Length: 265
Image 1 (cartoon, rainbow, N blue to C red):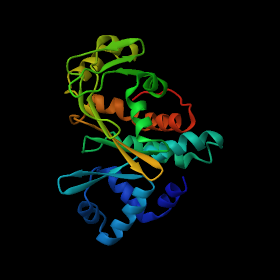
Image 2 (cartoon, rainbow, N blue to C red):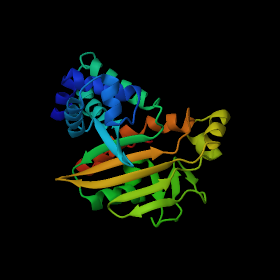
Image 3 (cartoon, rainbow, N blue to C red):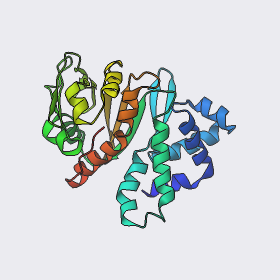
Image 4 (cartoon, helix red, strand yellow):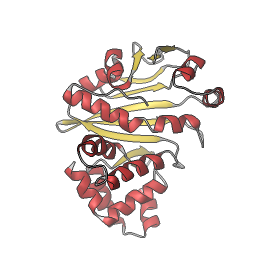
């Protein structure tokens, strides 16, 4: 956590995070122009933020897009705030909330999250694809043979969701996995307390896609999650955005300690 606190201590780096709060997925050139900072200075500050995992990047053609990553803030809040007086740590809690709320309102509709886990690519792959594992940190059993084009069946809160369009899109074991998001059935809506109007709104949206990128990073494994395919003002986007940082924190805790609270994206 030292890297996170160090990164947040510099006002210029906080300005960069503020800029990404306002508009996520910016290029280096856009960040420089928006903050009136020299390219070299911005590059150096971004390197520190990336090292602290507060910013993650995704290639788009020749461009590198920068995204605010709320996962470290979520981890600090979960692992530290509960141990101390919440009044004294209110600023940190407010920062966590602000980051996650801004992630729900970005013009760029993709969600990009990154976390580093002390595990192996093989074990992480198992945690993403084995229903016994996904149930432990997610509360969801994902059943599939994980071959491209194969169905992915979701079992959550006593509801089974199967659909011909719920399929594996990319499967490179221990490296990359992508599948389409689940179908919003009436049974699912009832299980999570959605009204008929909210369910109809979610069911009418195009199906989104979640992609997991797995990379070895020294003794750690870097996991990048991209949830994409949302329309502007998407109700589904708002619903899932609140869950991803907490879910990845739970996954990290499970793989590193053997225990994790169940959450849901």
